[in-house]
Amino acid sequence: GDPGTAYEGQPICDTCYDEDTCEPSATIYYGKDNEEISLIGACRNETEGDFRVKWHSTDPWRGYYECESDEYVEVFTDAILSGHESEEMLKKLYDRVLERFDEEDISFARVFCRSSNVFMTSLEIWVKRDFVQLLKAHAIIAEAKGEVDYDNPLYSTGILIPRDNLEKFKKLLGKKYEITTDKDLADLAAEKGGDLLREIVEAAKGGG
Image (cartoon, rainbow, N blue to C red):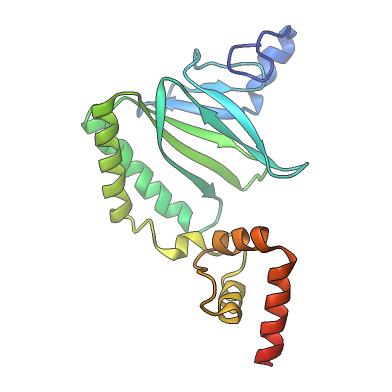
């Protein structure tokens, strides 16, 4: 297997190696060029060591891939969610950032990593490890986020929990917890476990 893969240094048959990237762990485009694609699979790495992938398991059946690099620095990451309102917003931000990076002659790579959820793909933008280029990149991304209203709660709700249910939970829990997005509620549930459920039940009884 190639360096930076799960089977690095291990013997791989020709067929397995050739077909490894039919469902790649990561797809990398350098710069604005959409013609040349570099793929990373379980045993094949076409980036010549620029990138490697790591699997993050969220439970025994699910998880996602994430890229790592010594040559590039990640300056932006988000999830492309098929059918969600954020999909169009991310496309606008992505196009704007690519245009400005090209104008400023910034050396960058676009990375799309696979997850176990067929409706979700991660979008990562990486910049060559250069202080001046990184400063420019962060400034451009901050400007682009403002242009597309990136921090609008619309884009961080309706993902894990229906919006009307999230509003009900917020009302039941009152001002005790700072809950704005789906992730806020999910993190709170992970932290408090059954205690949170009991609080919600008690609040519902009190409201009844």
